[in-house]
Amino acid sequence: MSTALDAALAHADAHLDDSVARLQTLVAIKSISTDPAYTDEVHKAADWLAADLNALGFDASVRPTPGHPMVVAHDQSADGPHVLFYAHYDVQPVDPLNLWATDPFTATLTKGEDGETRIVGRGTSDDKGQLLTFVEACRAWKAVNGPLPIKVTLFFEGEEESGGKSLPGFLEANKAELGGADIALVCDTDLWNRDTPAIVTSLRGLVGEEVVITCASHDLHSGMYGNAARNPIQVLADIIASLRNPDGSVALQGFYDDVAELPPEIAAQWKRLPYDEAAFMRGAGLTTPAGEQGRSVLEQTRARPTCEINGITGGYTGDGFKTVIPAKASAKISFRLVSGMDPKKIRAAFRKHVTDRLPPDATAEFHEHGGAPAVSVPTDGPFVAKAAAALKDEWGNEAALIGSGGSIPVAGEFKKTLGLDTLLIGFALDDDRIHSPNEKYNLTSFHKGIRSWLRIIAGFAE
Image 1 (tube, helix red, strand yellow):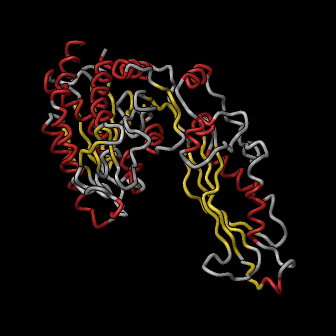
Image 2 (cartoon, helix red, strand yellow; image 1 turned 90 degrees about the vertical axis):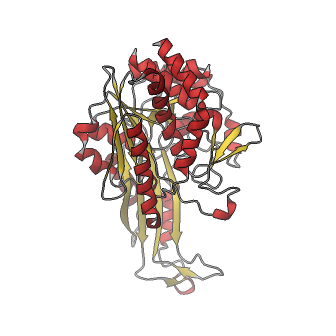
């Protein structure tokens, strides 16, 4: 296997310019999924991918959905384990266009301040560049060795950036075809740093809630009704203030009942990772962590549940001043959940917390804004161990086994519908400006991403 791997790595190195050219071709397709004006471009990107994969020897096809199409491809000629690789080919809008230094749909190679080459363009990092790291690895292996040493199913989504509404139904309808894999792979995450790879083994879940507090039947003159009338903004402010305890913990009854501490081996590894808390806070213009006291910033953002106020409205907020006591006030509040927490239980606890604190003349109305459980992968599984070994061989540093503070819904859908655990292995950097003007992908990350997948494919086959 080492001879076959060495030959594939050498081929990937020798043909890196060709890989970059294919990325440039894919970036040039304006697959903005959230804007109906680009529907034809989204379909064009799906067609391009299917054609390229068929030319590589995959059995690939574009699959229609009620929204944008999926691309599914198979190469199951090997006797080894079966992986399902997921990525998305749609991209975010490019506005504001005037902030781009280059054409967002012309993937342009530029030199960064650190002297490294960057590929600048919409989707270069999120997620077309990441998608192609795996495809280019398969291309390099096939070019010199013929059939892949493991079974591979590729699954590319066309509406991840616009909510992914078609995903659950598509997985349910095609679970017999897609559910036969041993492990799912998702390449939509980051490196730990420029020199250290990462395997994301847990994703936080999410509960979104909007609460509307109503008091009077209509807005009131504050001179005539001030003091006597209940003010819904005050009621809402008091409730929001009660959501956190003085030590920074969340005050909902039972909130931490199902929250486990980090496994000792993971906690020990995190302590060894190079991480500058002060620099992380400075990046946001802050100095002092505000979460649970006694918890590191890394733990707070990666392994602990949260309660955050995402927006408040009420009363007059336009220019000038209006002395009004509003009839209504509202807030949007989200909870990030860790493994073991039940979204329904947390939603119910929040609503009870609010209603228990309503004074006379105040009522609460709730609107649900999504909910999903956290996802975790056992860190002692064979696929984690093999992927970690392969990444260390490529990068020279031990792969960080980390939790992600964010949520990637497809991982939860894979577990719920297909029964598959997911390894999230990505090669982006946190300063890639994804979703922003001048999105970029480090050429070294792209190159080493291809090489990393070659090593992982070979490792899984052993």
